[in-house]
Image (cartoon, rainbow, N blue to C red; front, side, top):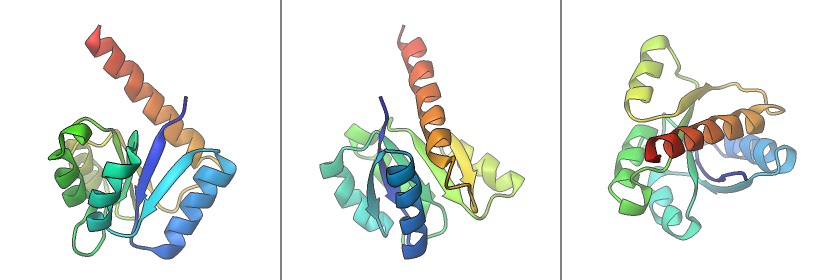
Length: 133
C-alpha cells in the first residue's frame, strides 16, 4: 500500500518535477497545491495519507501550513516530510522538532525520491502500529 500524497510548493517547476518523479516514475497518487492556504482547503477533500511540504513559501511557510493542518482533527497525526533547499544541520533539527518524519533536501534524485518517501512512510506506519499494540 502506498500513501496518497498532498504536495505543497510555490514553485511551478518544482511541482512539475515532483509530480513526474512521484506519479509517473513512482506510481504514487499525488495532489498538488501552490500555497499553504490552498493546501488547507484541498486537504479536506483529498484526504491525504502524507504531507510533502516545501519549507520556504510566501504567506504560509511549510511549518506554518503544518501547524494549521494540525488544528484540523483529521490531520492531527498525518505524517509530514519537508522538502527544502534550506537544510543546514540546525534547520533539519528544527523541522524534525516541528514533527517531520524526515527532511529531504533539494536538489533530490527524481529517480529514487518516490522509493525514499514510501520507505519513510512505511517506517512511520510500522512505528505507529507498534505504539498502538
